[in-house]
Length: 549
Image (cartoon, rainbow, N blue to C red):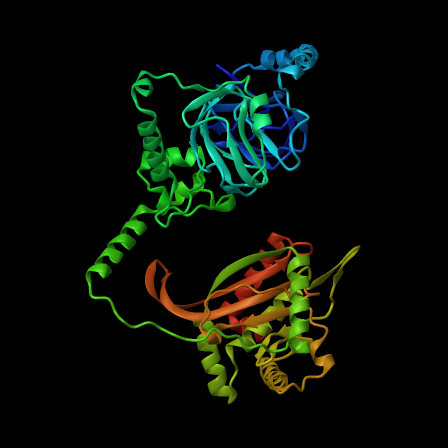
């Protein structure tokens, strides 16, 4: 049978609520204790848990919408169940509810007039004093029982502190204070049950006389939760028992208070997890569902075992000492420029990444032959720069630049080659690199890298790149991603050549591979375009002779 969920009154003064976020959508399965939505009250934004299990069949208040307390919030039931009557019925009843509330208000106004002589103190509340009534913490709650007080009369209370644990008709929930001050009065003792809106507590400046407020609220009496066992138990024993039980459940080993959602508590109890061992990821360290799901008892048990073992061994008297210190170095103009440009690139260009693995056996053999026969020493990076440039000729969309109202396709190919220096990353530019033979690329890269490290690069030698290559293979880095060097549309990140088992012709043999990752600007380079470019690049490097003809 479908369950109608109304907008709850999550604070003692809440008249309406705004749905900040829905964490479930229509059609989703909901378990008892799941967070349905985040609801913004007049005091704070709070998580609202489901007290029912089933399928979310209807959402009555969309995100960002505001509705009065008791308005239709959602309906949960069996999948496929027809709830149109419930939706229509709720809509039709709004008018009669308003009339009823109006009637109740008139009656209440009359009652207020008649009881003014009996000690109504609505106009006698001292400045700074806040009267807290029993809140309605679930959509069907009519009365609540104080399971435990976490503050005592005279204690200082901060906004957001947990005042008490209140048992509703659905669950036991923590009730936070929305005020700061001294707890001057407790109106409902532990174990007592009272109606919604009855005087729960009074907070205000220390030493304030609130006897008139207490007397004026005396017409609403709290009652003990009926139980034969409670009747036989002495009050002192009951209080002692409740207190010890609460402390056991609600304190960490260091004496700190444990904050946990009812669902988290339930799951922890079912799994036999000690909440004092769990780190909460919710607001103010509150333990929530995912913390219990991600908790690994084995790791904690191993830590406990190790600690116990260490405790049984003689302790070392060695205590490391030192001085905490920082050295401040002013950023150079180069470092400031690097930071500015890379930040602009990362935050403005929507990056995505494509990774491919290359067979490097042919390239290794070809390089050996060239270096031996030609009397020069060509590096792997020279082949990479050459292959990158030639692949751009076949895929001009990658050799592009984004402008607000157009895309610019470069007809020329200027390769930026990232060089690490003591003062930061510098990118010299090889102009018309696709036309250069390997020997010229080798000489140019060496020349510009030397100038970069000596801070002798000219401005024109660092401008105009249309594509960039960054190679960290020499440092043993196997795979990484780079930030696009704008206005380029892509940058190639080259990893180390790794010797490992590979499959060739159905046999496992020793081979040499290299991983390459290209970062692309999705505004100019689509995924398929980037993938096609990498396939061409791969073909050139795995068949290096094709670059020489």
